[in-house]
Amino acid sequence: MPSREFRRAMRRKDQSQGNIVEKKRERHPLIYGFSLLILVIIVVTFIGTPAVRNRFGGGGSKIVFGSYQGHPIEYYPGNYLSERKDVLAEQIRQSGQKEDIEVQAYQVWRTAFDQTVAHEAMLLQAEQSGAWVSEDAVDKALIASGPWTQGGVFNEDRYRATSNAEKYAYRKLFREQLLDEQFQRDLFLNQRFSRKEIDFFKDMVAEQRKFSFVSFPFASYPDSELTAYGEKNKDKFRRIKLSQILIKSSETEALEIRKKLEDRTASFEEMARAHSKDAYAEKGGEAGWRYFYDLEADFEDKKPLEGVMGLEEGAYSPVLKNRFGWVIYRCDSPALQPDFSLPETLQVVRDYVMRYEKGQVEDYFVKKADAFTARTRDVGFLGAALSQNLTTYETEFFPLNYQGFYFLTPVRAKGDKANLASAGYNEDFFKKAFALAPGAVSSPVLLDDQVVVLRLDEVRKPPQNELDLMERFHAYFAQQTLQADLQNALLKPEYIKDDFNQVFYTYIFPKQR
Image (cartoon, rainbow, N blue to C red; front, side, top):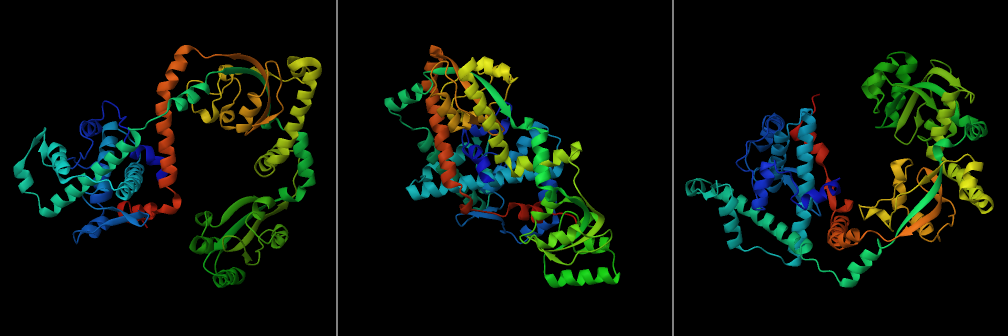
């Protein structure tokens, strides 16, 4: 998604010292790269591709990868997407990456597309705000770092040798780049904050707490519970070995294929390879062992599935309508009833329960955690842990660090002996943890894959150097928040028409057929 590249498009200028291209761009935040030789992978996958040569053969043609709010995201030599592609290709060349050539080409073009989407979004905002760039500013930028400047010296002969169309394209590109950067500079580098806001931010870390806790991990959900669930829902875990042909065009075509199978005028494998539209087609339709619950997910009407489960070896199902089209099954091995005494069958049940019935697992461990909390009232936290054979853990000191905004003090267990990664993003965790008095024990806290019970051990003020750092950190955090808000506002999926994959594999890296 383009949103993943938004921070890159913000051009925060944090490239390494060794990155020659970006170092030159930092000296003047404009366009550098028109004189770069295009990376070998670009020569192979772009200039060397007949489909692309033909596309540009008439001159002035463009490749359109999509649009942003109706504005085309397009490629033509000398425009923003072209410039970004060249710079990114040079970065890969200098890095010495040895990845597959198709992977590198995709990486270069996809990143250039994403950055161009963000660039187009910023230009549109700048335009709507009334921002503009003078012709004098464009002239100065072209003289300082344009395609006619070498070693800091403007080459007038090269300028005169350039066509008017190319000059216009360069001016347009530089003007847009200046406008984008000016708008971002105004937006991000001139923020003002009140003293009260900064003090509030510092107060969030002015108190740090340390806890003891016990964990009830979902991975310890007992086999006895799984067996009970499996026995109660035995039909779901029946399995049958099948091959299938999926037709998406029409029921008529599926019926014709079904008739050929009955008449033995074509083999199932031939029909699957020629007509089936799914991942099993290349294997002649072989789908392997399928569980009833797995098949059930493919159908809105579950009634025909009992007929499928009753097929004898070699028999064909009728043409059945599922969520993807029309399907014909062949039974390769008759259905088997589940044996819950087998570890592999219990693992299937476990996977199913964790995916589809996780609420049942949560309820089980919340009940166990409630019993533990009640026990602490009689024998204390450590006594309750010993009586139930539970391991106790300790956290590091951390403040009210919801969503991990403060990187110096994340929520984590001492020595990383237990995983509390999801706690930092759990509002209920902080509400219960920071409502405790010293020595008090919390009610159960449900995290992603476990239930924990906390005891507050100690409260302290952070070191002064951390408090001093917070004032400087506030500006960084505010900028990051603004960028995230801007990303959410500007790069909404409904604003972006993304045809990148289709266009890339049509014009840039055509698939061999």
